[in-house]
Image (cartoon, rainbow, N blue to C red; front, side, top):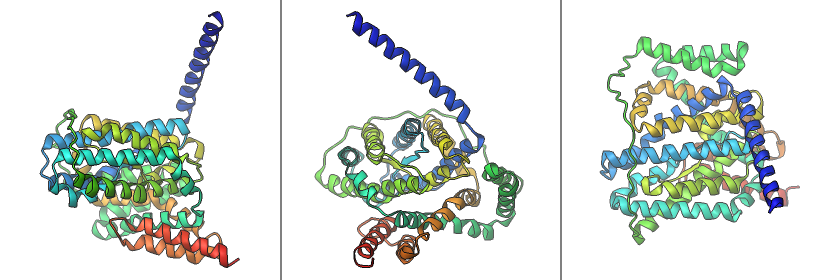
Length: 411
């Protein structure tokens, strides 16, 4: 008995020391640039992809109370998964809701009740959890060539770079100073170039745009539990497509972002945990949580922190901002929606400049596989879609097949 008591006491002491050490390391690793990177990732998430969730909810004539619960579920889920995984693996793990999944719901949700949709959400989450636990996803990612993954990532991010200059044409008074101060920052304050650009953009918007913050009311979100109804048609037409597009168009590119940034993600653990939290929150409206790709690229580059080992703070910060929005429901979404779209598009594109250039460079590094990388890039940029699955997945598949063919017959 004394032996077990002694060992248990020793275990508690070691655990206590470990927690204290982790807290001290966390404090020393915190940086303004990483926190801003996390904030920008959240702004981009709510100012862009989140609109599709509202479209899906409105198409199905869902009540405002259920929409608020939906917002709460995906925000809290993104917060829990992002903070926990970033701290556990010391990597900037950015999670979010399934954007292509929400696009699927815009078309399919009006044909079913919300209870039937909840049952489909649960099925999709269970399938993602099982894929993660099986380790099958890890085996797939290990076989994807780096040049192909980098080319796919460059294709995903390419439009965001173009949007900077498209926004410049629309609102030069806001965007031009942002671009100028971004490059000035790159020369004199490299770590804070994006921060400086964001501040300038907000100042210019306040001076030259009529921003109306009077409609904002602070209110706490109230989650609503919805009892699932198991309808075979809904499970097939919502659950299965939701699972496929979340894995193909979100989780695989999300892993590719981490690998392109030089990290070695534990694919199985990341996917299984997001699937597990999705399962818990599905009855409250969460249609699916996954690894982010576009917003993750904002947090994994040098703009987040010059040292790769300290960029995990961006993942923690992103999660905490998600938590804040989850608590206050749609209140802070109104704040983000009030910002000019050109400002959001520009800061997202500028923040992704390093990720775009690094991905293009990595994809073309091996002269032997440059055309394969080019094909992967072009297919991804094209925006083609088959069977509800986006161009990123097809670019990856074609690139991987061509790479395999070259390796076998063109030595």
